Amino acid sequence: MEIKLSVDFDAYEDGVKLAPLIEELAQDAEKSQALTSLIIGDWGAAYEESAQEFLPTLIAASSHFPNLRKLFIGDMSYEECEVSWINQTNLGPLLAAYPQLESFIIKGSTDLALEPLEHARLQELTIICGGLPSTVLQSILKAKLPELRKLELYLGVDNYGFDGDLERDILPFLYENPFLKLTSLGLKDSELQDEIAIAAANAPVLQQLEELDLSEGTLTDKGGEALLNSEAVRSLKHLNLNYHYMSDSLVLKWRSSGVNVTLDDQQDLDDEWRYPSLTE
Image (cartoon, rainbow, N blue to C red; front, side, top):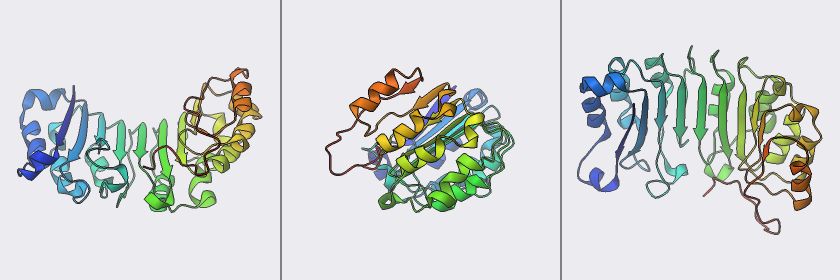
């Protein structure tokens, strides 16, 4: 069973809080036992109150949700709160409270931390944001996640929180991959997409990947050509290059390449200003 808990603006103005909704769900024996996927949406004023407002309650309720396998913190629309305005907190203790969790999705990166990032069963980690801080990237690089199969990171831009360094914070995912069971890697939504693509084209991690996701960024022919000329890339089951600035001629080469590649949402090549997809 999947349940979404959310507090819209009007309810929040009337005094409704998310923590009591979590407590109410925990006390419902039938629903809490059947719960396999919990989505935490807007907590009322995510642009001014952090996830810390309800986090202790969610941690304390963990014993009531023994079958929970998927947790999404911050699933809210643009109208509810722009992604760069979502105030997160240190979600590391939340993972520790749910040792049976397999999928963890986070939206928003303001004040986000993941310490400690250790989990024996987690298979999927996704962070959706307009700019991922280097501190979070370093936490992931140092994480102990032996069962991780899918890692999807929206890197974003500096105006919305990205302050990472390509060589220090991004390339280690390609050249020093710490996750031996990883089969799907997304390093996406970046204004460094060409540099990442060039580095990825012959990266050691490709030997274990089935899917590489370099979508939603400012990828041009420069990065696209490097990928197209890579034999290792051709061995992937799927390459996602959705939302890109590649030329029509290169798109045609991809379509005749035999590679299972997604190339939708081509952007205007004459546009003077080029942005990743999720930068508002």
